[in-house]
Image 1 (tube, rainbow, N blue to C red):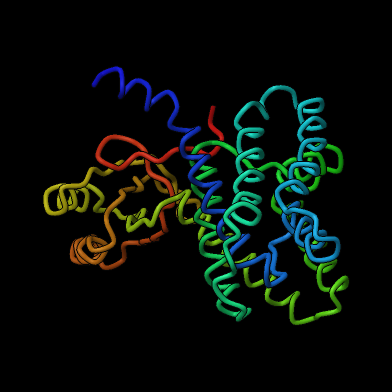
Image 2: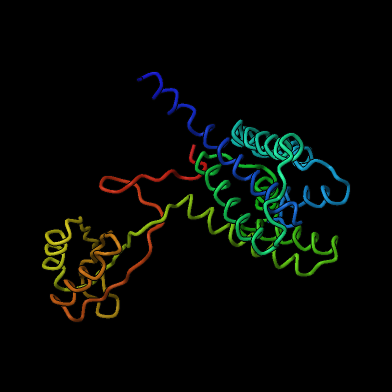
Length: 292
């Protein structure tokens, strides 16, 4: 039992990458690619080659990704590592296995349904791969190169690359509607990926500024059973020293905290923010992306 747990902990990332690659490949080959829909990057180029020249999508992605991977290793060193090539190989294998060996037919030829369900499944697969601290190469490598040499943020680099490929798809097939469906699929996949990575959180971070910080903090700890941190702060308008309270509570406890603060100090200043990733005692642990 102990050996099994050790094995699982050691190779969990690689297992997650395989699972994510399978889901991503199903999304591509069963929903998106047959309907000419893509979310940019290498898979988008593979989609174009598939429909124009009947090139196997998996082989196309492998052929495009391997040179990019080698360039990435040359520029950034070994941090791209085995997990990147692991993801590249499995996605390429599963895509052609589904299409050429199993010969699974597309589930739907309705572009709206293909966009919706393909985007959901694609985002889930990508999220699981990222949780395994892997990548599928392609846009990730190119975006990092653009970021390094042109000082453009990674976010904008991804947007530029994916949008360029999507626009190219519409131009090649002469279909403006196709561009719109691709952009919708990209949006859905991105949102689902973020949700898988960050988790469906219900926690909120609350800042409270009040002269009655002691009374408020005591009641919060007593009534909600949550810890409170007091931060030394200075009101620059009044130049007065005070404490800013900070606590993290579940969504259902937010109104309790607001009520406590209001009852103790009607002039208390309160801000509430969403919490994406929590790690530490008392909260669930989240895996940082690519945090080796």
